Structure formats: structure tokens, C-alpha cells
Amino acid sequence: MSRSGGDGTAALERAGAETVKRAVELDVASRFQESLVCYQEGIDLLLQVVKATKDEAKKHRYRQKISEYMTRAEDIKKHIEKEKQDGKYHKQIRIEENATGFGYEKLFHEYLTEVVSEVWVEDPYIRHVHQLYNFLRFCEMLIKGPCKVKTIHLLTSYDEGSGRSQQMSGLEEIQQSLRNYGVTLNIEFSSSIHDREIRFNNGWMIKIGRGLDYFKKPQGRFSIGYCDFDLRPCHETTVDVFHTKHTKKIYSVTECAAMTWIPMFCMAWQDCRLIPAETPLVPLRKVRDSLKSLLELQLRVFCMDNKDTGNQSVLTDLLVSLLSLCPIVMLTFHPTFPSCHRLRNVIRPGPRT
Image (cartoon, rainbow, N blue to C red; front, side):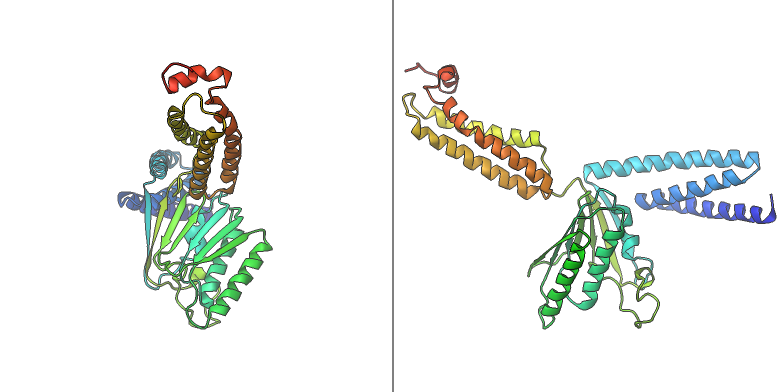
């Protein structure tokens, strides 16, 4: 092995040792997500050492260590996945005063997976020029990332001073620019919004104490950090990361059918028990109308809980199918319907008339 090759291997050994040492420290501190990243990076470095070294004894030692680190990394990964499934995952990042290296890409990249197609941003301070630029850079990151974002929802507040027209024109320009990339920006305003929150439709939710506006003002237009946010000093703030299946439950079609038909039939059976057997067909339309009202109410509830437009489409199809059966349900409970006398006797025991 050449001297330069030996120096390179030694550098890899030091880097690998330092990285896994940091992984163990983070592991002990229960900072599992960060620990997992360090374990993975450290393992990769040590594998490069094994590949480069000629010393078989050293190779054997490193392979043993790598095996131990891989086992621990896999355990941490399973633990994190379980917390995600249980909705208990919580990671906190503390950004110190004047800290650098916290650009949007660095902060959000591990949560922007390929399945992300919809983003919600709630931030009351997307008002002034620099805040509009912050939001624009966040949108640029979404377009560049591995995700395929199609819709961005922004909830913010109006500028209370003379800058409202500038705020509106800036947001409209961003909206039009995003449209050119096939991305829809929906903008809403609230006078009572206070909390800052960013949600992705893959289940990740990030709450930044200062919202997107956690960068300090650059010293000048030509100073380092003016363009690259990774080099821009930050205000002190905390970032809380959560993961949940969805903040609102998304119901499957089977669940929708069960949750709709069970109360619907309970209501219909109760109504039919009160209807005399000789009742003509017309008054029974009240039963049909009550079923229709209940179905429409169920659909509104489901659609409020489901932000996914595809799921809403499925629910709409379900509603149409159920409503089309309402006349059949109405006839089924009518005494003149030939095959239903037995069913009516079950619903309302007594002699047939």
C-alpha cells in the first residue's frame, strides 16, 4: 500500500470512529433519529476501511464492530417505525443563537419523501418582503426535492399596515410562478392564527417556534449568507417534529360503508316499527328522506376528515350508490312488497294484516 493510500485509510478510520462515537452518544441521549443517521454514516465509512485495508486481523475486528452497529441501527429503525405507527414520534431540534447550517433543505430533506404531494403551511407572518422571500425559497425547495408536490396550502394573516398591497401582489406572483410548474397554491387568511406549523401528507408535521422566519438579517446584500441560507446565522428557536398516520383519520371504503349503513338501518328499523302495516307508500318517503339526509351528513363529516381529494371521490361514489338504493330500502319495508312480510315481522312482531 502506498503512503498516500495508507493516509487515506487512516483518515477514513478516524472519521468512522468519530461518527459511530457520536451515534452512541446520541443513542444514549435517546435522540434516536439523529443517532440512526450517524450509525448509517459511520457504518458506510467503516465498510470503506474494510475494503481498503490489507490487514486481515483488522478486517475481522471491523466486520465484528460493523455487525454490532448494524444490529443496533436496525433496532433503532424498528423503534422509530413503531413510534410513527403509534403516533408517538417526537423529535426536537434546538437552533442556537447565531447558529448556521439550518437552511430549509437541511431541516426538511429527510421528511420530503417521494410520496409527498400536498403541503400545508400555517404561518401568520408571511407579510413583509423578506418573509415572502422565505416562503418563496421554501416553495423552491419543494419543487427541487424528490417529492412531487402538486398542492400547497398557505394559511397566514393580512399585513395590518400599508404593506397589504405588496403582500397580496407578492403572494399572487408566487402563486402564478408555481402554476407554471404544475403546482397549485391555495391562499387563505385568518385574523386569529398564531401557531406555526408545516404538514406533509406523508404524516410528518414540523412546528418551528419562529415559523419560516428564523434567519437573521444579512449584514449586507453582498455578504456571505445572503443567498445561501445554510450560511445565514439564525435566531434561537426550537423545531418539533412529529409523525402521525394523519391528524385526521382517513376512512377506508369498508369503514365508510359500515359507519354509514349501521346507523342508517337502526334509524330505518325504528321508523318502521312505528308505521302501521296498512300505511300507503307515500308516507314511507319520510323514511327515504331521513336516510338520504343521514347519508349526506355522513359524507360531509368524512370529507372534512379527509383532505385527500381521491378519497373524497371514492366517498362521493359511495354516497351515489347508497342514495340509489334508498327507493329499494323504502319498498323493502313496505307491507305490499311480497318478500318482506317476514322481515317486517322481525322488525315489528305481530300478526300480519
